[in-house]
Each structure stands twice: as structure tokens, then as C-alpha cells.
Length: 232
Length: 232
DNA sequence: CGACCATGTGAACACTGTAAACATGGGGAG
DNA sequence: CTCCCCATGTTTACAGTGTTCACATGGTCG
Image (cartoon, rainbow over all chains, first blue to last red; front, side, top):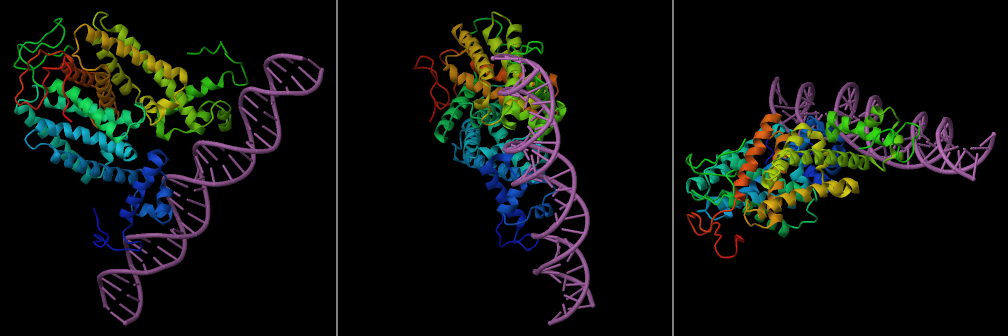
């Protein structure tokens, strides 16, 4: 994101420490995991003494928030690429691609993924990166809205679908990197993500007016213009 | 699980330290969160000096695994209760209830929930509690299988449905306790879980042979005895 | 009763995050 | 060009951590 030959604020003793620290933190966090992550370790890695970090970050948590922001940005790019690579005339497939991209990113960079999925991290994200993340969500939502408008998706409220889909994807990513599914390589991760989004997708395809309903309890989309009845 | 008046191994200096330590760790972890969790802190809380912990646990991680096991056991009980409270003749609703129970547990005890959802924790779980967790999964799967057999659930492979449903529930729980959905109280958590399981449920209800399909790309359940085609 | 061994303690080590005082050197004012 | 200032980095220090070792204690069993 920043070339060293363009010192935005100033070129100081180190060159551009803040950026170097974030970069060092990224490799430290990838090597040790976000829990073993040590401020002194990244300082060592950057060839600098520990308190120097405090000239650029208020605390260890602040540094962590910065790297989380960087991670969010990278994942955002991966997602953007996935959208771009999906069929441009198929918004549902675009939406689905975002989910698969997230799982792939998580399995490729588990530590980075976990670094940004930490309680309260979203609120602590640097505003710029948070905006980027919001922008991605907006894109995702737009694709889904278009898919729904084009008739690919049942008329369930958008935010509910978004929540369910994102929850499923995030949950799958967590399950994988927590090792609950055993060792999972990139190929298998893609397979699992495909399966999960497939199950979701089955639910999202609009259904005809009458459906086979063994009992009257379950979903009955007859009366109210396509809005299914919940049972609570 | 263990009454103090039944000292299984022996009654020693403290009474039953191991159990007391786990209990102390549970309140410590609930108060400080699983990252700030401090071995010395729980030792203090138990009125004992730090190295005493090492007579009962090999390391801090080992202690954490024990509390995670305790948490898993508690959540397992909550899930069991939820299944018992669901309509006994409605396996799909039972399955759904497990998901809602998980989200409710997560929002009620976020720190405990996070303590057991940590990379590699499942493998480190005490065998007994891991067995308990496996047993819960088995129950869940049985309910789902029965639901499918009874015609409530489309003929998607069971493990895929399990994965999708559990991913969605876990993802929702994570999203809530990470604060990405803003402040969420118990009532709202239940609402969200209901919504998500509802979206999923819509997908799980069997659909007739022919469906409204705007293009030929999407799901087309015609030929292969109910197995939908994936697109990769 | 007496010895043993499981259980708990105190001191110590390497490490961590963080604060305060001090050193340094590049860039702008004169 | 010179000089001073202030942003940047260092040294030292402190409290707290996980963990180990040598030692104290006391219940249990021969």
C-alpha cells in the first residue's frame, strides 16, 4: 500500500517505521498466532527497541488493530477479485463467490483471519479499513439485492439472508481453522465452502406457490406476497 | 459434575483443589475474558499459590483445556434441555432448537463460549468432555436424519446440511459476541437465531421436482434422485 | 509410631507490556 | 550556512506473567 520512496509524513530515522512494524507484525502473527503475538517480538523483528513502537501505536492492542485493519483490507481485495472473477451477469454467483473467497482466505491465512475476528475488533479498526470493509459488505448486499430483484433469490428480507449467509461462511471458516473438521487444505476448503453455499443457495432459490409440506407446521408461502411465516 | 463430599481420588490439603481451580478459572475467565486470563489470577482466586496449579495441570493451556471441557459440558446440557423442550414429534424443530440454544448460550456466556472455540482446542479437550460433545453432535445428527426420513428435509447429504447449519449457528454466535452486530441482548439473540435458522429451514424443506428457475444455471433438481448439482 | 509420598510454598528466571528520562539527528528559521 | 527544536528512537526500570526448582507439610499406610 505504501512505497518506501513516498514518505507521506516524513522520512525519519528508520525510513518508515510504522509501515515496517505492521509488516513485521504480520509475519510475527502468521508465525506465532495472534495469542503468542508479542510486541517486543515485532520490535525485534523490525530491528528496533520495544518502546519505539509506542511512538506509532498507543498500545499493543492499537498495533493489533492496525494489523487487523491491514488484514481486513487484504481480505477485502481477495473478495473484490472473487466478485470480478465471477460471471458478471450472475449476481447470485457473485454473492456466492464472496463467501467462498472468505473461506479460502481464512484457510490460507488463518492467523490473520483470526486477528481481525476478535471481540470488539470491528469497533477498534482504523476508520479507513472499517470503511473498506463496510464497502465490501455494501457490494455483497448489492449483488444479493440484484439477484433477488432478478428473481434468483426468494423474497426473504435482505438483511436476514445476508446474516444467514455471512454467518454460515464465517462459521465454516472458524470451524476449519479451529481444526474441528480435521486437517483441511485449500482444495478441501473450497469444496466445503461450495457445499455450504450450495445448501444455502438451495434455500435461496425461489419456490413455487405450493410446496410439499408434510405437516402444516413448516414453511407455507401462500398468502402474504412471498413473505414466509416464521414460527415465533 | 463432582460433589465435594465424594472425593474421587483423595481429600488432600485443600479439599479438592482441581475442581476449585476449574471453578475459579471459570469466574476469572468470565470476568476478564479468555485472553486476559491469568494462571496466577486463578491461583489467587482459589487462595493458593501459583505453582500449586502445576500439581493438577501440566500448563496454563492444560488448565484452559479443562475449563473449555467444562464449558462444553455445560453447553451440551443446555442443548440437551433445548432438545427436550422442543416438540417431541418434530425432529426438525428439535434440530433447530439446538442451534438457537447454542446462540443463546454464546450470548449468555460469551467468554466461556470463546474459551472452547479456540484453534486446536477440540483436540486438546479432555476425552470425557470431547465424548460428550460428540454425543451431542450425534443427537443433533439423529434428529436431522429423522427429520429427513420423515420428509421434512430435502435429500441433501446429511453431513452437508449439518455442516451448513452448524456453521451458520456458530458464525452467528461469533458475530454477536464479536460485537459486529452491535449490542445484542438475549431477546435479540433469540430473534437473530430464529431468523437464521428460518432462512436455513426454508432451504431444507423439500421442494417439488420442477422449480421456477429464471436461468438454467442455478439449482436444477430433476435428474439424479434429489441430489442437486454443484457447479464447479 | 514412623516413614513416604502426594500436595502445597517460596524464591528465582526469563519473558512480557508499559512508563519515564535521556540521546540523536534531520529540517526549518535566522 | 548555522543552530536549535522536536519528532523519533534508546536505556533503564517496574510490575506482572508462565514456569521450574528446592523445600515444607501433613495425611495414609505398613
